[in-house]
Image 1 (cartoon, rainbow, N blue to C red):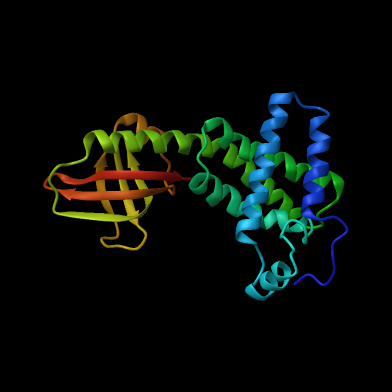
Image 2 (image 1 turned 90 degrees about the vertical axis):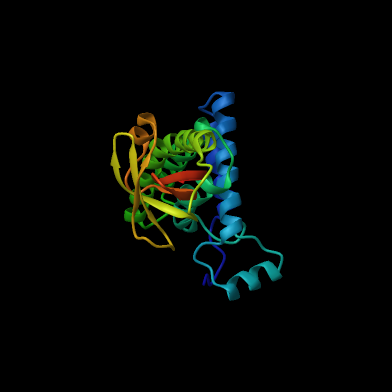
Length: 230
Protein backbone atom coordinates (compact mmCIF):
# COMPACT_ATOMS: atom_id res chain seq x y z
CA UNK A 1 0.00 0.00 0.00
CA UNK A 2 1.39 3.41 -0.94
CA UNK A 3 2.23 5.53 2.11
CA UNK A 4 2.44 8.82 0.27
CA UNK A 5 1.70 10.38 -3.07
CA UNK A 6 4.47 9.74 -5.64
CA UNK A 7 6.50 12.57 -7.13
CA UNK A 8 4.72 12.01 -10.45
CA UNK A 9 1.52 10.10 -11.03
CA UNK A 10 0.87 7.76 -13.93
CA UNK A 11 -1.41 10.41 -15.49
CA UNK A 12 1.41 12.97 -15.36
CA UNK A 13 3.96 10.52 -16.74
CA UNK A 14 1.65 9.57 -19.63
CA UNK A 15 1.15 13.26 -20.42
CA UNK A 16 4.91 13.89 -20.42
CA UNK A 17 5.60 10.80 -22.54
CA UNK A 18 3.08 11.86 -25.18
CA UNK A 19 4.43 15.41 -25.22
CA UNK A 20 7.91 14.04 -25.91
CA UNK A 21 6.64 11.78 -28.70
CA UNK A 22 4.52 14.47 -30.34
CA UNK A 23 7.64 16.52 -30.98
CA UNK A 24 9.22 13.76 -33.07
CA UNK A 25 6.34 11.82 -34.66
CA UNK A 26 4.07 12.41 -37.64
CA UNK A 27 0.46 13.32 -36.87
CA UNK A 28 -0.83 9.85 -37.82
CA UNK A 29 1.76 8.01 -35.75
CA UNK A 30 1.22 10.29 -32.77
CA UNK A 31 -2.52 9.59 -32.87
CA UNK A 32 -1.71 5.89 -32.69
CA UNK A 33 0.57 6.49 -29.70
CA UNK A 34 -2.12 8.54 -27.97
CA UNK A 35 -4.70 5.81 -28.62
CA UNK A 36 -2.51 3.07 -27.17
CA UNK A 37 -1.59 5.11 -24.08
CA UNK A 38 -5.30 5.77 -23.58
CA UNK A 39 -6.04 2.03 -23.81
CA UNK A 40 -3.25 1.25 -21.34
CA UNK A 41 -4.68 3.81 -18.93
CA UNK A 42 -8.14 2.30 -19.34
CA UNK A 43 -6.71 -1.15 -18.56
CA UNK A 44 -5.03 0.13 -15.39
CA UNK A 45 -8.22 1.84 -14.24
CA UNK A 46 -10.23 -1.30 -14.89
CA UNK A 47 -8.01 -3.87 -13.17
CA UNK A 48 -6.05 -1.91 -10.52
CA UNK A 49 -2.93 -4.14 -10.58
CA UNK A 50 -1.20 -4.81 -7.24
CA UNK A 51 -4.11 -3.31 -5.26
CA UNK A 52 -6.27 -5.07 -2.71
CA UNK A 53 -9.94 -4.32 -2.11
CA UNK A 54 -9.27 -2.18 0.95
CA UNK A 55 -6.90 0.07 -0.95
CA UNK A 56 -9.29 0.29 -3.91
CA UNK A 57 -12.20 1.26 -1.65
CA UNK A 58 -10.13 3.85 0.21
CA UNK A 59 -8.92 5.58 -2.96
CA UNK A 60 -12.16 5.48 -4.93
CA UNK A 61 -14.15 6.44 -1.85
CA UNK A 62 -12.16 9.67 -1.75
CA UNK A 63 -12.81 10.26 -5.45
CA UNK A 64 -9.38 9.09 -6.56
CA UNK A 65 -8.32 7.08 -9.60
CA UNK A 66 -5.58 4.54 -10.15
CA UNK A 67 -3.60 6.63 -12.64
CA UNK A 68 -4.09 9.77 -10.59
CA UNK A 69 -2.84 8.12 -7.38
CA UNK A 70 0.05 5.80 -8.17
CA UNK A 71 3.44 6.42 -9.70
CA UNK A 72 5.07 5.02 -12.84
CA UNK A 73 6.36 1.87 -11.12
CA UNK A 74 2.79 0.55 -11.27
CA UNK A 75 2.76 0.79 -15.06
CA UNK A 76 5.11 -2.18 -15.34
CA UNK A 77 2.86 -4.72 -13.65
CA UNK A 78 -0.08 -3.40 -15.64
CA UNK A 79 1.62 -4.04 -18.98
CA UNK A 80 1.36 -7.79 -18.53
CA UNK A 81 -2.42 -7.67 -18.23
CA UNK A 82 -2.61 -5.04 -20.96
CA UNK A 83 -0.72 -7.04 -23.59
CA UNK A 84 -1.62 -10.56 -22.46
CA UNK A 85 -5.32 -10.12 -21.77
CA UNK A 86 -6.83 -6.68 -22.31
CA UNK A 87 -5.70 -6.04 -25.90
CA UNK A 88 -6.34 -9.51 -27.37
CA UNK A 89 -9.57 -10.24 -25.49
CA UNK A 90 -11.23 -6.94 -24.64
CA UNK A 91 -10.28 -4.61 -27.51
CA UNK A 92 -11.74 -4.97 -30.98
CA UNK A 93 -9.03 -3.73 -33.31
CA UNK A 94 -7.11 -4.63 -36.45
CA UNK A 95 -3.55 -5.84 -36.88
CA UNK A 96 -2.14 -2.31 -37.05
CA UNK A 97 -3.48 -1.37 -33.61
CA UNK A 98 -2.46 -4.72 -32.12
CA UNK A 99 1.08 -4.27 -33.35
CA UNK A 100 1.12 -0.68 -32.12
CA UNK A 101 0.12 -1.86 -28.62
CA UNK A 102 3.39 -3.75 -28.34
CA UNK A 103 5.48 -1.12 -30.11
CA UNK A 104 4.23 1.83 -28.06
CA UNK A 105 4.45 -0.09 -24.79
CA UNK A 106 8.04 -1.05 -25.60
CA UNK A 107 8.85 2.58 -26.37
CA UNK A 108 7.24 3.63 -23.09
CA UNK A 109 9.39 1.15 -21.14
CA UNK A 110 12.57 2.49 -22.78
CA UNK A 111 11.47 6.06 -22.07
CA UNK A 112 10.78 5.27 -18.39
CA UNK A 113 14.29 3.84 -18.11
CA UNK A 114 15.85 6.87 -19.80
CA UNK A 115 13.98 9.22 -17.48
CA UNK A 116 14.88 7.20 -14.39
CA UNK A 117 11.23 7.03 -13.34
CA UNK A 118 11.41 3.33 -12.38
CA UNK A 119 14.20 1.94 -10.20
CA UNK A 120 13.53 -1.75 -10.91
CA UNK A 121 15.64 -2.03 -14.08
CA UNK A 122 15.21 -5.80 -14.35
CA UNK A 123 11.42 -5.53 -14.38
CA UNK A 124 11.63 -2.74 -16.96
CA UNK A 125 13.80 -4.89 -19.21
CA UNK A 126 11.42 -7.83 -18.87
CA UNK A 127 8.43 -5.62 -19.69
CA UNK A 128 10.27 -4.19 -22.70
CA UNK A 129 11.04 -7.69 -23.97
CA UNK A 130 7.42 -8.74 -23.44
CA UNK A 131 6.21 -5.70 -25.36
CA UNK A 132 8.52 -6.47 -28.26
CA UNK A 133 7.17 -10.02 -28.42
CA UNK A 134 3.61 -8.70 -28.30
CA UNK A 135 4.33 -6.39 -31.24
CA UNK A 136 5.21 -9.51 -33.24
CA UNK A 137 2.56 -11.91 -31.92
CA UNK A 138 -0.60 -9.83 -31.42
CA UNK A 139 -1.13 -8.99 -35.14
CA UNK A 140 -0.60 -12.65 -36.09
CA UNK A 141 -3.03 -13.82 -33.41
CA UNK A 142 -5.61 -11.24 -34.54
CA UNK A 143 -5.41 -12.49 -38.13
CA UNK A 144 -5.48 -16.12 -37.00
CA UNK A 145 -8.58 -15.46 -34.92
CA UNK A 146 -10.40 -14.23 -38.01
CA UNK A 147 -9.20 -17.14 -40.14
CA UNK A 148 -10.27 -19.71 -37.55
CA UNK A 149 -13.66 -18.06 -37.01
CA UNK A 150 -14.34 -18.00 -40.76
CA UNK A 151 -13.19 -21.60 -41.14
CA UNK A 152 -15.39 -22.75 -38.25
CA UNK A 153 -18.41 -20.94 -39.68
CA UNK A 154 -17.90 -22.51 -43.10
CA UNK A 155 -17.10 -26.05 -41.91
CA UNK A 156 -19.00 -26.48 -38.65
CA UNK A 157 -20.38 -30.05 -38.46
CA UNK A 158 -24.13 -30.62 -38.66
CA UNK A 159 -24.02 -33.73 -36.51
CA UNK A 160 -21.94 -34.36 -33.43
CA UNK A 161 -22.16 -36.34 -30.20
CA UNK A 162 -20.62 -33.81 -27.83
CA UNK A 163 -19.67 -30.16 -27.71
CA UNK A 164 -17.18 -28.47 -25.40
CA UNK A 165 -16.95 -24.73 -24.69
CA UNK A 166 -13.66 -23.72 -23.13
CA UNK A 167 -10.27 -22.06 -23.48
CA UNK A 168 -7.99 -24.44 -25.34
CA UNK A 169 -4.19 -24.37 -25.25
CA UNK A 170 -2.51 -25.42 -28.48
CA UNK A 171 -0.26 -28.29 -27.39
CA UNK A 172 0.84 -29.78 -30.73
CA UNK A 173 0.88 -28.70 -34.37
CA UNK A 174 1.38 -30.55 -37.65
CA UNK A 175 0.64 -29.26 -41.17
CA UNK A 176 -3.13 -28.98 -41.40
CA UNK A 177 -3.68 -30.33 -37.87
CA UNK A 178 -3.97 -28.95 -34.32
CA UNK A 179 -4.08 -30.70 -30.96
CA UNK A 180 -5.66 -28.80 -28.06
CA UNK A 181 -5.67 -29.06 -24.29
CA UNK A 182 -8.92 -27.86 -22.65
CA UNK A 183 -8.52 -25.57 -19.66
CA UNK A 184 -11.35 -26.94 -17.52
CA UNK A 185 -12.70 -30.04 -19.26
CA UNK A 186 -11.75 -33.61 -20.09
CA UNK A 187 -10.13 -35.27 -22.01
CA UNK A 188 -6.73 -33.75 -21.38
CA UNK A 189 -5.91 -33.57 -25.09
CA UNK A 190 -8.16 -33.50 -28.14
CA UNK A 191 -7.15 -33.82 -31.76
CA UNK A 192 -6.11 -33.87 -34.40
CA UNK A 193 -8.46 -31.10 -35.51
CA UNK A 194 -8.22 -30.52 -39.25
CA UNK A 195 -7.52 -26.93 -40.34
CA UNK A 196 -6.15 -25.32 -43.51
CA UNK A 197 -2.33 -25.35 -43.75
CA UNK A 198 -2.36 -21.52 -43.56
CA UNK A 199 -3.86 -21.75 -40.08
CA UNK A 200 -1.53 -24.44 -38.74
CA UNK A 201 1.44 -22.51 -40.13
CA UNK A 202 0.51 -19.31 -38.27
CA UNK A 203 -0.52 -20.96 -35.01
CA UNK A 204 1.96 -21.46 -32.16
CA UNK A 205 2.21 -24.04 -29.37
CA UNK A 206 1.08 -22.45 -26.11
CA UNK A 207 -1.40 -20.03 -27.68
CA UNK A 208 -4.96 -19.94 -26.36
CA UNK A 209 -8.04 -20.50 -28.55
CA UNK A 210 -11.41 -19.71 -26.99
CA UNK A 211 -14.53 -21.18 -28.51
CA UNK A 212 -16.48 -24.42 -28.95
CA UNK A 213 -15.31 -27.73 -30.37
CA UNK A 214 -17.54 -30.67 -31.30
CA UNK A 215 -16.88 -34.40 -31.36
CA UNK A 216 -18.03 -36.01 -34.60
CA UNK A 217 -17.80 -39.50 -36.06
CA UNK A 218 -14.60 -38.35 -37.80
CA UNK A 219 -13.04 -36.72 -34.74
CA UNK A 220 -13.09 -33.27 -33.13
CA UNK A 221 -13.94 -30.19 -35.17
CA UNK A 222 -14.24 -26.46 -34.46
CA UNK A 223 -17.84 -25.35 -33.97
CA UNK A 224 -17.17 -21.71 -33.06
CA UNK A 225 -13.99 -19.69 -32.50
CA UNK A 226 -14.10 -16.36 -30.66
CA UNK A 227 -10.54 -15.41 -29.91
CA UNK A 228 -6.87 -16.37 -30.20
CA UNK A 229 -4.44 -15.12 -27.56
CA UNK A 230 -0.64 -15.47 -27.68
